[in-house]
Length: 350
Image (cartoon, rainbow, N blue to C red; front, side, top):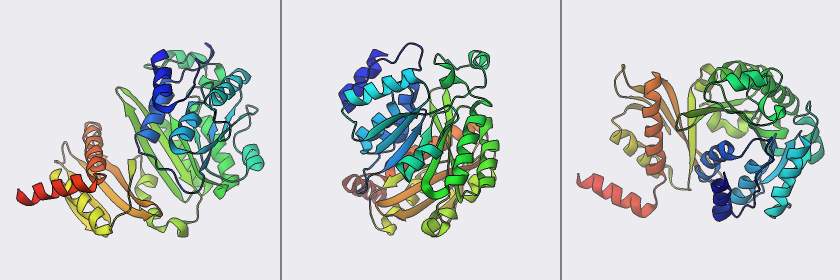
């Protein structure tokens, strides 16, 4: 564990002390944050981005990394007083008090009081208690839960916990631009997505975080008016119809012709059979037996392009091939111009 804290100090200059023994350590949280924030190459925006971390824990690792890496501001909430004190100490030691506010809430509070006090925010995030009882946590295969009861269990497990967040989101609506949560069980996605749809969300996305043999799932939803994200809405239907998984990455500002050329080169090298409509590609890689169907959609934003790839259909074994396909797509489309010119020259000379 000391190695992890040394990593945070060396690479991010975060002064994190070992949390109290009875609370969860930051190792698993760190890997997830690294994938989603550092690994996704977060770019700071001109306007400050503010988010809420529901149940920040004793380490306060999500806000610390978000503040240091992306320059975001956070309201970090927690119900356990020991964890609150530890989180506040880590923020102070890292000298990020101007960007992170740690607040203690009651166990029945989620978003309403926070937004009422601090105003509208860009997003909220949560790593919820996965289990309904400590007995279930101890018996769950491949899971170690050594934290406090509030960190490991909740009434109704993670579905019950996130249901409360969805209930708040139905009232707050676009006062939070994006609502999001991590999930420990894939089976939780379907009932929670149904509740999000019932709440009237205009945009819904799911994804999968995997590292080694461990997998987690992500669910995000928004009530932002469809007219402000028209280019995105058309791509949400697969996520609403099934448990399909999507991932996305950002691309620096460039002409649409160059984005299209980069994507189509990767599709060609992957042996994909595709149909194209504007900046959207639909196709299949491999055979019907061991291959997978996918969509790729590129849409412009204020700071460049966003490219989203979605696993539409295929056996469980094919998902691994899809994630490798996505990694190649991300790597090649984000290449620097010099590397891109070399790659194009090589392709032309082949």
